[in-house]
Image (cartoon, rainbow, N blue to C red):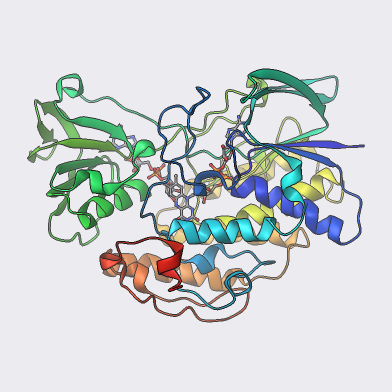
Length: 443
Ligand code: FAD
Ligand code: NA7
């Protein structure tokens, strides 16, 4: 019997498990599937952990999510086609839920059947080697500290790429008297109440960590961008300046001449695609981009079609794109989708990479990833979902952010699955300090 290893039980790994379950529910015979998850439960980044650094077994903590994290895009844009928000919560809910609510939703879909039996928890894959037409996978049972081995016909890598921080160094860091940390270790903005905070970076983490610090009472927040400013209309107490030049004692000196005393520096400088558990010849090496090269349809490893990667893209689309990838990967594994010739694969990858390299603004990036996801959607029996509506929502959301970065999360969108319109949340995001599921759902 064909054997498939799935590495990681975050949203992508769960999409893969669900794709096989979907086929099995239709009465088809599926391969033997084993999912390895190094944490003690599933859900990936959405499974919040207070821990930073190493866990109790000495293994690096993959979690980068923090308390008070609310969805940074409309939930309607990530809705599962086969499991709507209305179905899970029994009623329409607002468009920008906090982490615990999305976590509950993700788990709702996979908790009904017997999928959990397929996951080996507290189990970390340590090496993956291709030998004699099979993958030899070595994994550590963390609780008993034992290394075990198994062989598989296919390997699906769904370990995420927002867990290993990229940490640059600036002059004067070694003498800075305050705290220097990466957003990977950021857990609770309350810690910075009354403090002067410097945030470096100009992407999602910089934007949200800076806003969180402001919301929970930081004295000042100064964002240092490197290439392009985010350019939002920042509220009182926040400013965006050009690139950190050096630190002198507790003073941060920026390239545009700004000087700012700081208690803490939070590096929101992104993450590394880091897969030390895969043999080098099979390892994806890329920056955070919308179309990492060497992956056919963004999924199948060009040099070995039995190795598949999910969710390796920079992400506008998330959960339903992961689903489309997983349904596609499943059908490649099942032989329902035939791989084209090597030269056709090469030109398909090159076509997408060339298109990506010409993108100039968020609207074009949204179009690009929507086209990619639609193409995958058409290749499998992933249920109907309105990606045109999702495209429209994403563009509207981008424009809401430009209008007012503090209020974009108070808007409402309609579902691409059920058509229902989200109610406006009972408390505007700027003043909603409690992020619990209970308070959000008004239970
Ligand atoms: P992950 O969620 O990272 O899951 C990967 C899993 O693999 C983990 O459970 C990990 O323990 C496991 N694993 C890793 N290595 C091994 C190994 N060697 N052996 C066994 N298991 C392993 N997306 C949104 O749609 N909306 C948001 O609001 C949003 N906010 C975000 C905020 C932050 C701070 C970050 C970092 C990301 C955010 N994202 C958001 C994007 C996020 O990438 C996706 O939502 C999603 O979590 C990606 O799923 P994944 O399965 O690819 O990776
Ligand atoms: P991203 O989106 O990969 O962004 C990384 C940011 O880090 C980006 O703005 C980079 O700026 C910046 N960067 C990288 N190196 C440096 C140095 N040396 N100095 C200053 N700034 C630097 O990662 P995020 O963590 O923001 O987002 C990851 C996910 O978390 C995302 O999917 C969200 O949903 C939440 P550049 O543009 O290169 O100048």
